[in-house]
Image (cartoon, rainbow, N blue to C red; front, side):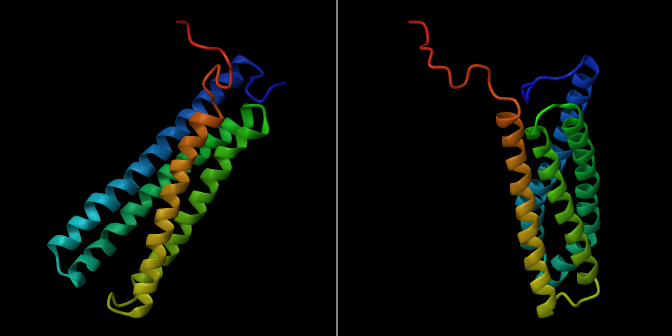
Length: 168
């Protein structure tokens, strides 16, 4: 059986539901990362002094990472459905991508709990903040790569690779 063939109608619906859940969860998560990183954080640092901006962001981070945990969980459930009911090894690539991103957001949540107990002016806080920013960027790249993977590798455009010339 080819990796893109589905065994039954029920399996096909499970794959469609899985991909839908993965797209919604990953889309919300990636959109949150982009909006927070490109709009919210710069605006806060432009309007507030550094200590106040850091304090405000520490208050926002639990909700921000909560969105990542919930939407990442939705993407993870969708990728399991897709991987389980679609045939072929490539079907599990979304699960691997989702699991890696979700593990990273759990790790950043733990960093945040440590950061809350530190002074925002301490060197340890600055180090953990830099680490969390780097991991947040990696998660965004992983999610973006997942969208490319899902739209290109798992559902290639019919006819790609054909040597047919267009009609003149």
